[in-house]
Amino acid sequence: MTVWIVVSILALILSPLAWLRPSRQQSGRMALRMEARRIGLAMQLAPQEWPHWMSPEPPNPCAQYHRPRRSAQRPCWSYWQSAPGVWVNQWREVCEDEAMLVHLRTLPANAYKVEADQQMITLYWGEKGEASVLQAIAAVLKALA
Image (cartoon, rainbow, N blue to C red):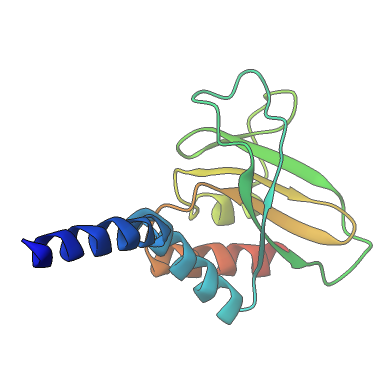
């Protein structure tokens, strides 16, 4: 009887440690983030105000993968993926730049936005997929930088 009391007390003491263990989904995201760091991409969770027409609404904050631009003289732009493979600008006009579409079409369906400013090129992504998806993202960001 005493053994069972001691075992149950130990179980009560140690059970909160199970809550500290990351879930399978969290472990997968951490592995993707470490792989991104290894291949030279920076990542952060960034709050984002999404356009009202984005359906379904992307997460907020969203994972933001970015890399520096090579030249500050390049134009600034933003494109949202309104449907898989359909990239639109802030006025919901479909992207017609074939040179850019070649790269944007290689991105996964859960890539929500790609934007470039004077310093960085950034991709907002849902972080679902394998490391091969991350390689495609890194290739697109490098090509567009």
